[in-house]
Image 1: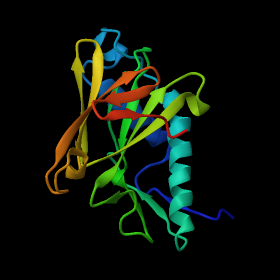
Image 2: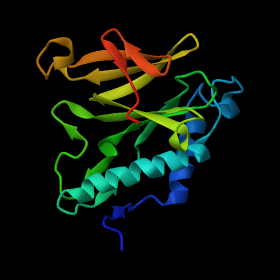
Image 3: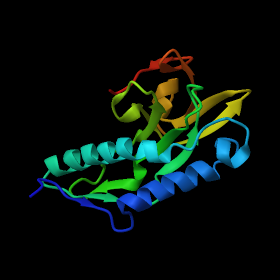
Image 4: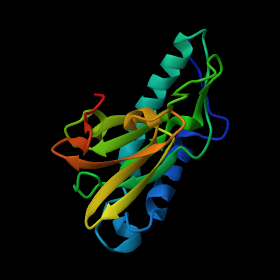
Length: 188
């Protein structure tokens, strides 16, 4: 018997792959198959193991606190972009869709929620490096051929009160996301 249980009322393993595929195909300007532009390749099948491993890790974290159960609501994969320019789409996941039965603030707090970006790399475990940001929300924009991650962040990141949201813009450079304030390196 497993020491933790993942509760997915609306998502099966095949449905997760289907949702990821639909999101990749539905992201205007990002999927080569959808646009013929060559901005990215639909690799949702390749992403499925990385997503499953991440969700198993979240389930372990949840179970470690009073034997909680992880609940997954639809809508977490918000967008995809090709941040590192390798032709493979990189999913952006808002962890606000995950909740834990034993924790009121699982993956979120007054500073926002965890925004996780998976950047493709053939040498990485399960083919993706994972980057985590704390934010109130995100959007990906293009500047020429570069994908830029814009995050609404806690005001303390800009020397303001927490209620005064400020914005961070992150671009990819040499294996990390960089911004005016520094860089974000992989979690693993």
